[in-house]
Amino acid sequence: MSHAMPHHAEHSRGIHIHPSILSADFARLAEELARIRNADAVHVDVMDNHFVPNLTLGLPVVQAIRRATDLPLDVHLMIQDADRWAPAYAEAGAESVTFHAEAAGAPLRLARELRSHGAKAGMALKPATAVEPYLDLLEELDLLLLMTVEPGFGGQPFLDVVLPKIRRAREALDGSGVPVALQVDGGVTRDTIMRAAEAGADVFVAGSAVYGAEDPEAAIDELRSAPLR
Image (cartoon, rainbow, N blue to C red):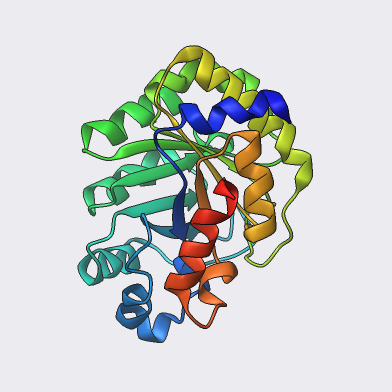
């Protein structure tokens, strides 16, 4: 525990909360976006029913979300053939586009293409995918997403088995000096955000913890302050 404490001092980035729009009421999208005005970004889950066993939303809905909010869009593509489809989401005005390492044929080229469209480039890893083979790519990325549930469905419990991977990723990032955001997604609550932040994560996707609350903005504030207590 003691060796982890300096991380908080090093992290000028602080704790960032990205509520997942997947947990919102899509029939009232503009209203739901207005309920999270204090969020750092809106996390948008795109699933194709191939890479993950669920089908959510695609480019037209992302374009509608773009029109409905001034918050940055953090698009997470859980889709096959990311090389082909990801750039369109950057063109649609997403500030950040995250593809899965497992679904990209040429992750380095794709990260550069996303950046060339003016978006931040993110790469996601499923819980069982090791982070080590991708450490050399860090300087090509703006964000590394370590899934803390199996991607595909909301409401799953946080997988503590991923915590050592978060620690190893944080050590690699600190050692490289590359300013990559370390994001976790899945089962984020007031309890689990403390464990993930202690391990070194600094960006947190929260679905039901925000949209399941009576006051989503208060829930965001609580999540943001929980690791600092």
